[in-house]
Length: 503
Image (cartoon, rainbow, N blue to C red; front, top):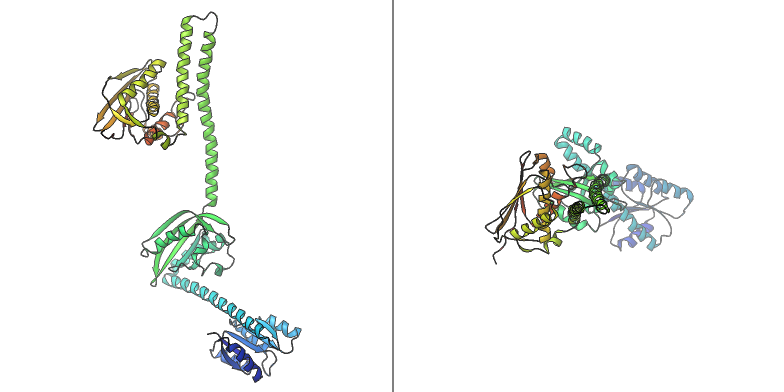
């Protein structure tokens, strides 16, 4: 119950004020002089509010207010006077009296002032308690290891990361200087003593609080939590992205949780700028490579077509022009197929899959190459077989897969080597092995083989899309791919297709 001290040298006024306030449930104490009230306070008696007359024999109400201000006691003083004047009002303000009321006192006004004075006192007491709690915790930590804490304090104040400690009730009990700067709080008590929810935005609060609760539910000293790209809220309601590392520990039987918060907004911006720069450089290289490849083909086609169009052109020249045109057209078709494959999703390719015969699909691809003479000077070693080797895939995707491997094998042998194709069924899994006796690949090349637009060929002789597309198709259809290659001895590509259920 709130206890109010009434000071007035007139008994009737003391009794009247007591009657009004006691009816509202307040505990009332009376004093006939300010001197007596000072003695009671100095002896240790506590009050929630003091209501004092200004003009009294001996110590005045203004003197009493000055005593309270000098002692820095959190005790609101309401001054009452029957003779208000500018001098007394200025003195009341100077010594931080809570309110200055003229007689006769209005009941409603008095109760309103008392209520507001109590609210102010309780708020100040609460803030003081929070501050003392924070100071007590810091003192306990320093006592455990003074030297270590001095080092830690220097580190915490020097770091640009916010370091915030909460207790098991999710109340912030300590924070370093960077915490106030990062979250833009001017006064320590605006952050210390508050619930940690204060740092989270409303729409993300439940998500992050669930994660924090998981840490709190674990045994102290054994639980850590890493949170990335967390959206946090400053005092002005602006937001920023942060990475948070949280550790838990026990101190004097109580559990505490310290989080290190790093603002990654600038880092994200720098990464985006870097990606943008790399993308522009990457597109420049791609445009040069693909443009050169297309121009080479178009130049060859245009040159031979012009020669074949002359009146004196013989059939041999026209036949050669036709073959060159077909070969370059096939080259451009393969290039565009690879480019179009980059935009396809797993879903779009898998939706069209069906049970196929591996031998038949290989034959179909080889027939296309024979018609275009793309592998004209390579020796293709393959044992023709009518055996049905079932596997699930999309026919067009398989043709693109095999075409890229064969074209790479031809390039690796300078278009004059031997390419061996072997297909067989083991269990219910179809196997396809393609071997060439070309230049082979180093370990460094093998590590980069799937990177888009990576190529060991000269500019204009390769786009670096082939193996990237192969990898994309292999992943889409869950095909295992094993590559064995040795520089100077050739390469072997072993495809193992997913098991096909018996029908």
